[in-house]
Image 1 (cartoon, rainbow, N blue to C red):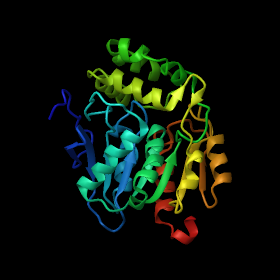
Image 2 (image 1 turned 135 degrees about the vertical axis):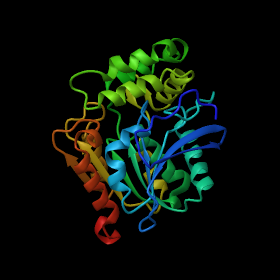
Image 3 (image 1 turned 180 degrees about the vertical axis):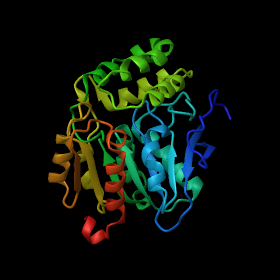
Image 4 (image 1 turned 135 degrees about the horizontal axis):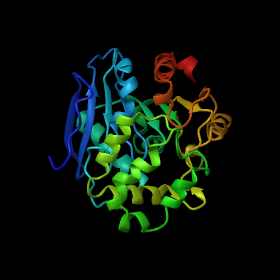
Length: 292
């Protein structure tokens, strides 16, 4: 194991796993062992980690196996000198599914994790039974100004590492943020690891420029003849990625479910976790004829 830091024990009885996947020392959390339903894969957002799912993981794991990977360059996974392009992320995750022999699963992708999930549809459509996109990237151009500034070429990659820990606190630690203080402190500690700035900068540069998001799922949806049932889950007060992106996809793709959480921002799974868990369960457990 090459990680300098180790996960904190915030999940009693959960299993922390590591494996070399495509040259990345990948970490994931595994909870539950029921095979009553397909496994559930939870993909976190940019500069986040598996901890973000803490408030819904155990509820979701009562009748299924739940796996929460730290995406490459994030959390307790490795930070190799790689491209960090969206397709690279999807390739690593597809190899991880192969390693675990997961033939088909349900997926949740939050923010950037939603973009990775969308790319996985193109990479290995047969593995995805249903897809829930939570405040997802990749569905429109608009995005918070701070992320546009972060896309300035080479700025963060070359100069940002000494400031990643304190920068995480400064960006996230404010009264309007719904993230728990212990979560923010843990992210600050994690982002102090060497390679975090490089991973963050290259990831942002591949999906965002000064005008906004550069990846758009609409451009490739027609290439997929058999789209999985999709559900969109969004806070109506999201100031990072506007809920209008979800409404546009519902208009464009027939049968897409939309669930809006009133009064929530970019992290509904932190702000109203019980409502989010219930909405996910209904989406994943509803017969296909009714979900579509």
